Length: 240
Image (cartoon, rainbow, N blue to C red; front, side):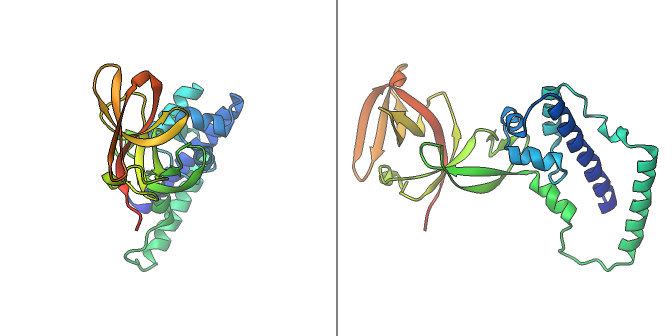
């Protein structure tokens, strides 16, 4: 797709943002509330509504369903006058581009914005999941990040050396996803009102081993209904 057609698509999607804002305000829903329902930040909603972010089609479909409005034909709302003006602008841009030398390796702002819409900012938290310590940008595809629902992924900063025997050290950053079901693996769990990182091994329908290793393996048998499993750790970024 050439650049002027891409820019036309961006303008169309910008109208989508304006329509989303209009329908959201009619419904009396704040950007923060809409973002929470859709699993995105209020900042993302604002960027879509103001045309600074190019929304994915599945996001548009979910907004349409939530606000009960048809956004599929939004490209048809342009007036004839507006469409003619766009075409004139496109022809002008084409003419100017032909007269300008092409610079290899230079990315256009349009494509920069487009690529930013397929990246999700994943927050880094301490164990309470209340304080944000930073963020990482990861690719998002079909509303999933590394195969997990985009609204469930997070990073956890390791706060101690309880799991140093597993090479999980204080200061490391672990990619994780929120879970409810328990299986074998390494989890952020809450036991006795304290949140810790532990390996879990199921030993029955209602019991499990909690394992930590700070040079020496320590196991604790617990009833599953006495612990709260919060997130499962999938991989580690080691601090150097």
